[in-house]
Image (cartoon, rainbow, N blue to C red; front, side, top):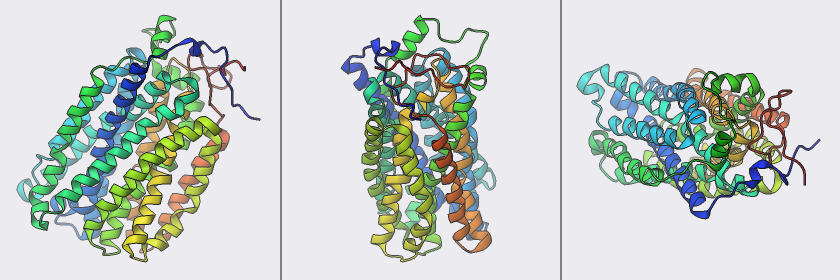
Length: 457
């Protein structure tokens, strides 16, 4: 039975937002996630192309790449911890200040990576410092996307929540574009210059994105739903934490977010990170073809994220996500077959389609879907816990894929791994309710942990 509900006399529909507030929130959500994904894309590209040589030079090439991807995956371990820490304050004092704090933590960690000594200078201390910076990156990013989509979902008009919340992931795709563009420019240098100073320029450039993000966020206003919930006494009392409420009343929502996101995140980083390494190290294609593919993929992904949000407002979150998960299940095997043509055009097409469907098509639909699964008192916490624990598992996708490839010499186990995670997303989406039009100020329904539906027109 369809649970798609309109909000004719919903409390939250009485809240009005002026255009300047909505525009400011949209830009703030976009630019913050631009920084987050810029950080992760430049790191993922470096992990695929240079870090195995700079930080793990004494290992054989396959193990060096595996170790490089392991440091990439470590950042995802810290994300649930960062999500728990920051979302507690996001549900207690508001979304704005948390988003400013995470911005500076991520930006600082990325900038410092550009200053790190390599293995040739300080030995084993180099990968230790690299791992520490990745942990700080992950800790900050653990609340970034959750905060952005919660803020925009709570600020946007009911009928356009998907459209506006998807701008967070338009920003993520823009981060991919900028990261790829910087790598393209750096790779114009001779290889020895890329290994010595070029990669540092990539990471040091993050300071520019950080400053731009702060300029937009410093004038950000709190979401009207949060302010209204606070004025009505719906925000948790001092003796009760959002975390406790989320697990007690919203555990089904947390499980749903985990299942919905795990396949998406694994497929996303498969195309953003693993494929770049596979192209260079297994297919032996030139490394300089990777950043242009990521650049073009990111441009199409920006369109895909926004389109996903708009379509979810039109047709509903649940049916659209079911279709996308079904596509993810059938994509991996033909993707590998096409990669093995070694045609730059065909390989580039695989990357672009991967960006459209797996990287941003999934999260464009998720943008309003995930926040609408929770009640008003623990929305930020619920989204952050479910999303970032799944990211901690799915984010190790490149590492797991590389391990399966090294152990078996075949891409078939990688295909099976990706199909299983996509199937989890598909089953979860079938199990999840339709959330379009729900009252964001409603308390959780104690019977099943979902927000109470808005009254029908």
